[in-house]
Amino acid sequence: MNKIRLIPVLFIKNGFIVRSEKFIKHKIIGNVVNQVRRFNQWDVDELIFIDISRTKTYDSKRDDHKVERVESLDDILNVVSSECLMPLTFGGGIRNLSTIKKYISNGADKVVINTLLHLNPSEVKRAVSLFGSQAIVASLDFKINNGQVNFYIENGTKMLNTNFQEMITLLENLGVGEIFLNSMDKDGTGDGYDVEIIKRFVESTKLPVVGCGGAAFVNDFKELASIEGISGVAAGNLFHFTENAYPRAKNNLVKNNFNFRLYNPKFL
Image (cartoon, rainbow, N blue to C red):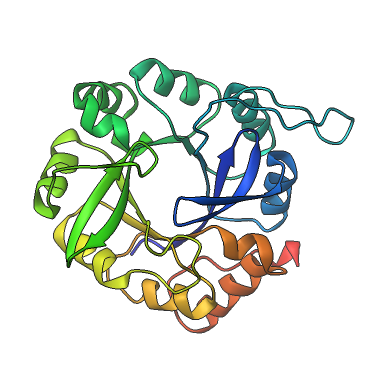
């Protein structure tokens, strides 16, 4: 049985890492380089970077011997991939195959895509053919409206007319390697994961599923990890604001017999 991954997610907005809340409120919490170095020290299973910039301007306003200034998303990926010691998933704003090629050639192990899945699915199929399904992660931003699961694109601003089963069929037919689920209702709230919807996905597809959105405590990780067949447990804000959150969470999960890789003691 494959081990469940515990995955930090970092949201990039205009050159900085930000705290996100319900896809609307964003607070700067750090620069990309220092965040990667901290996660290197924690020996994390994987890192996910998602660009949520809407103006597509990037300037970290730093340029010294400790922190290199970044002025584009390409700069960010180059810096991150040169520092990152773990598998790197990178995405946000991908609208064509050429961007996927560029990200993978510049150091991303996987790319995470959302809007492109629906605006140009043939590009996604070509990407799967070129790089393999394991390199293409389908990101689904969802909300619950009147008891129904609704999916959104364009940074959560446009709702799709696609129901749950149609979405599953689309992703399986495209041949993507993984589904990354992010609850817009839960994002940044600390109210816990939308376990019901994530479990429904896990039970409805053979594709690996990673859940994100709403974690505040280790018990939230345990609740999601209890879903049989879950592939990954992801979180953003928790790992930024709680001291040694990742190693403490990892060891707690392992001690409670959840199927995670033990935190490497050499970093303690």
